[in-house]
Structure formats: C-alpha cells, structure tokens
Image 1 (spheres, rainbow, N blue to C red):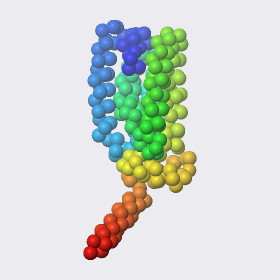
Image 2 (cartoon, helix red, strand yellow):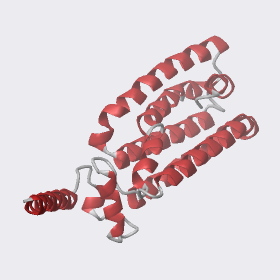
Image 3 (tube, helix red, strand yellow):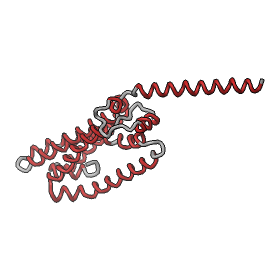
Image 4 (cartoon, rainbow, N blue to C red):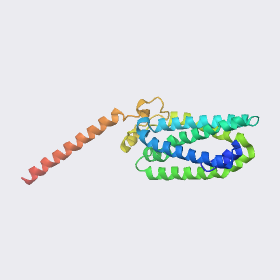
Length: 231
C-alpha cells in the first residue's frame, strides 16, 4: 500500500489522479509522524504490546477495506469511506510493525546467534517485501476487493502468534534474555508474568546485584592478596 497507494486510490476507490496524489501526500505525512511517535512509547508499551496493537489496527483496517470495497460494487460511497482505513492502516503499521521487527531480532536472539538472527530476519523482511510489491498490482487487477482478504487473514493470524509465543524484551538487558532461555521456559509465554511484563523482572535484578557483589568481593580479595604479597 505504501508503494501503490495512488494507484490503489484511483483503481480500487475511484478517485481522480489529483485527489489520489494529494491524499497519498497527507497519508505519508501522518505515517511519518506516527512512526516517530512509536519511538517514544516502545519501552513503556513493550515490543509485544506495540506489535499486537499494530497488528490489530492493521487487521481492522484490512477487514474494513475488504467490506467497503465489496459494498462499493453497488454504491461508490462505500469506496470513498474506505480511504479512512487506508490512513488507519499506515498509522497502525507505523506505530508497531514498521520498526519493532527490526528491533526485536537483535534482542531476542542469544549473544552468539545475534548477528545470524538479525541477518536472517533482515533477509526475510526484504524477500517478502519484494514478493508483495510484485504481486500487489496483479492481485488488485485480477481479483479486486478479494485481494484484501489475504491481508485480513494474515493479520488475524499474527495476533495469537505474538500473544502466545513472543516473550517481551523491553527493559531487559541482553544477558537477561540469555538467562531466560537457559531456564528452559515453556513455549507458550502468555501465562508467564516475567516473560510478558514490560518491567524488568525482579529475578534478573537480584541476579545482577549478586553478580556485582560477587565481583566486588573478588576484586577486594584480589587487592588484599596482592598487598600481602607485596608486603
């Protein structure tokens, strides 16, 4: 939709070339504003929270677009109403799914696997992006409003996957994630308060304090032994 919005608004909604380009400019502006706003709340809302909020907004947008463009076959007023949901989609996308998938792989992977995980996630992002850009004009031209059903269903599937399988990484140290996986956690994270909390779990704070105290004692002991050796 980001690449082809003027064509979508002209071919699917029926707007004029001038109006389609004007609305696309306004959409790009709001898209930019909400994308920047996401950076200010990502730690408070969390990665899971932003992805689920974004995914639900995208699902709602695609569902509404699908219904309205279907109804527009008999009444063009419904097609015009769908423009609001094209805007809502980009707002929802900019708030979560635009940025978080670039951030999350760097945090969820273990220290030895971090670079490999980021490489795979980046490649996946661009490969699927390329595929979608290639099929979008063909899909809209071939099946019309039914094309949007695909994205409605996919976004609906995203929500339970994120809710049940994605642990939170906000306000964690990279070592916290390693420690979490070393504890052999269950696959379903929804029932684990420490796994989904946006605040740093107390167990990690206590463990860090213990390590700091342990290191301080080792340094102090080493200093005493060195001083005795010198004397």
